Length: 264
Ligand SMILES: CCCCCCCCC/C=C/C(=O)SCCNC(=O)CCNC(=O)[C@H](O)C(C)(C)COP(=O)(O)OP(=O)(O)OC[C@H]1O[C@@H](n2cnc3c(N)ncnc32)[C@H](O)[C@@H]1OP(=O)(O)O
Ligand SMILES: NC(=O)C1=CN([C@@H]2O[C@H](COP(=O)(O)OP(=O)(O)OC[C@H]3O[C@@H](n4cnc5c(N)ncnc54)[C@H](OP(=O)(O)O)[C@@H]3O)[C@@H](O)[C@H]2O)C=CC1
Image (tube, rainbow, N blue to C red; front, side, top):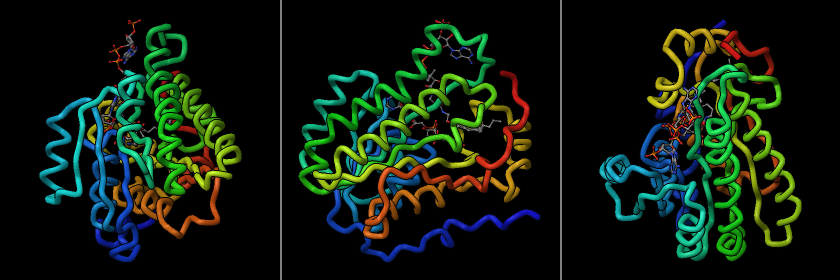
């Protein structure tokens, strides 16, 4: 049985002012999931700073946002000193959404050293560095961190050896810091979407492969950007006050089943 896909409107369950007066930093806010998250946080009253490498894409998000509560900065997060300086300059921060990430699909044996480094740099080292740099700002506001991940990175994802290793590292870091930073009232979470049919996912895998992966999902459907955005917003709100260090899978149950056949 295929579960129905909610409309963008049906995903919106939080009250209108749930994030009023909060400041959020969303990485990768110029496309896909990051853009959906940024727009939803703005709707809920937050101010949002979006970063990504391409200013043009961020400007498109600003056009959709139609509010001065959105500002953006072109930034390569793998330039760790620049990213750290930028986040320090924001001052107090209520929510960091570590969304920028991704990988290429390749059999493990065909991933070169530079390819492995590029993916682990983006999905582990740069994310870790950003959240460490954000610590003082988060501590000043009892802030939250949502790290975007892959569902069940430890189940052995074909074609994703480099990325799964990086995401498992972030999950471990999330749990470690959730414990270590509790004195500063900082909460950290990992959020693992299932297959979200963004343009980025389409560049990574052919449509046929994505359809096969979605068909194997227990709920028989993809995850929508709106669903991911609502969960991120909830984790940034009072709804998550009793949650700490969790990996939350918004994946239609994908993490419960063996991954579909892909090379690798
Ligand atoms: C069923 C399972 C359920 C799994 C369920 C999966 C469902 C779909 C889930 C979708 C998940 C998503 O994340 S969708 C979002 C996708 N979006 C993205 O991935 C965007 C971000 N990605 C990137 O920017 C790139 O992929 C990334 C490699 C990380 C960074 O790129 P760089 O510019 O640094 O890299 P480059 O300079 O081009 O290349 C660096 C090295 O990597 C190698 N490299 C690059 N592309 C390569 C490729 N396709 N194959 C081999 N090797 C490659 C190059 O050859 C270089 O090595 P040498 O040749 O040795 O020099
Ligand atoms: N779509 C899916 O099915 C799933 C996605 N995810 C994860 O969710 C996140 C968002 O994915 P999605 O929206 O689909 O993909 P996109 O490719 O649209 O998003 C990736 C974003 O990250 C930004 N980015 C990439 N590299 C850098 C960098 N070095 N510095 C700054 N920004 C960077 C990109 O902007 P720019 O290129 O301009 O820098 C882009 O906005 C990723 O971490 C992805 O791996 C997880 C599970 C499933």
